[in-house]
Image 1 (tube, rainbow, N blue to C red):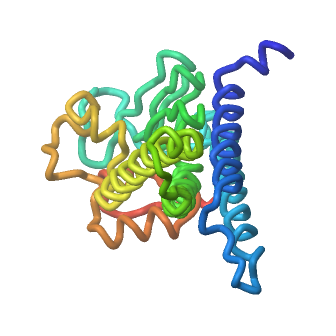
Image 2: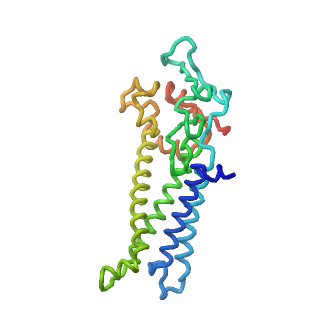
Image 3: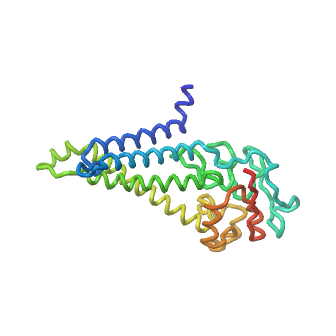
Length: 267
């Protein structure tokens, strides 16, 4: 019981919840734009802000705890591979056997040592959610980043509105020290989440994963291609449509060889 409470995943989730709750509490305890006495809907803005914060926390736990797309058996994949040669040839794909879990990996999958599983369309292992981002939770991860960015931008505005003029710097700092710390943390988190969201949107529009983009020259099915000829790229609109609007397993071997999407909707 104690070991499970002290696990990295549990500590990350507790830390996220406490940090979010602490910054929200600071914004409520200071004279920010959350309240406008002249407005008859005085409680509407605080209620909406709390709901937005709770939504972001709920999405965080959903992405953190859900299956990112673990490869559980070889029978799930209907792929074509060549037993006699190690090279990729037209109509055949050589599947790599994972050296850790001993399963044959579908294309774009990778073994995560932290999760001890192979993950379909592996993007990266995120220490903040203490979970992999893969085929099943990548869309949810993007939704979480979007909602989180909206909440942080709103919190940034509220924190800035809470600073008021004082006669001396010492008086100002004494009154606003906690708000100042919250403002600094909100600014840093806003910049990080904004950059992360922008990077992921760029990679999704190019049909790259973070792992593929960072390790292009070391991945067997990509190292023979140059960076401008991604075999999975079907154009920005089609890439975004397939990422956000399709569900189920994509047989990436078919995409790689035949330029068509073969969907298996049994998840």
